[in-house]
Each structure stands twice: as structure tokens, then as C-alpha cells.
Length: 157
Image 1: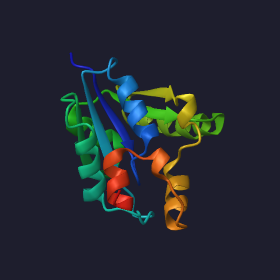
Image 2 (image 1 turned 45 degrees about the horizontal axis):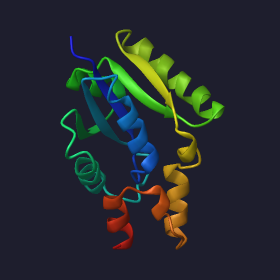
Image 3 (image 1 turned 180 degrees about the vertical axis):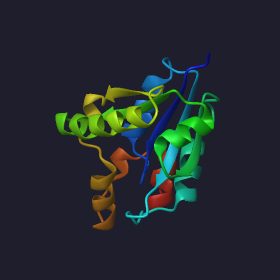
């Protein structure tokens, strides 16, 4: 049986922290789907399609990674792609507390899905999309936190 994983999130924008989590998890899974979840309560800074293009470009040389846009329950997206695992990155203890509640709910909805938590590499602990968006909105330089394709799209560099 293939080990298929869904890495869900908004990825608004994709950061080096996201890339690090995916790269470090490649040995654990046969296939990783990066799922861009749409949320009616959030107004993203970048379009779903732009984020999808970024992810596909970042991982274009890695056939085990694919990306998609989904709406609704994450467990339903898992079912659609055949994923038995959900991957989540953890920076702080507070992230774990929040993510564990979601993992418990997902397990209640589908007991066959396990959530795997990976802690961030130390250099990416402070890299959060929310903070990166704030830096960009306020004219700051967020390039140290962004993959090259995202840097070029955001700053034209």
C-alpha cells in the first residue's frame, strides 16, 4: 500500500518553512499532495491559482509532490487523493495545541487518517505566512523567507 500524504494549508504565501517541511518528509511518504484549502472566512493576499503555480514550480523536479486546490473538509480531500496521512508543521507548543484539536476532529471524522507532526527546522521557527504577509504589506523585505519563484512574483527580483 502506498503511503500517500496531504499537506493542507493556505500557503499565502508559500514560505521556505513550508518547503522545508515537504522536503524533510519526502522519505516518509511515496506521494505528498500539497492541498491549498479555500476558506470563505479568509481573504487571501494571493490567488489560489497563483499559489498553486508557485508550488508546482518549486517542486517541478520532484515527481512525488503534487498540488491541488480544495474546498471543504480536509478528510474529504484525503479521501479524494487516497491519502491516509495528514502532514502538519509545528513551530511552537501553541501550534501543537491548536493542531492536535484539529487532528482529533479529523480522526473522529475518519479513523483511518493519521496526522503526522513535523517540527520546523530552527532557522524557520519564526517564518509564518501571516508575518510574511505583514512584512510585504508594509513594504518590508520578506525575501529571506520566500522561495525564489515567490520572491520573483512578489518583488520582481
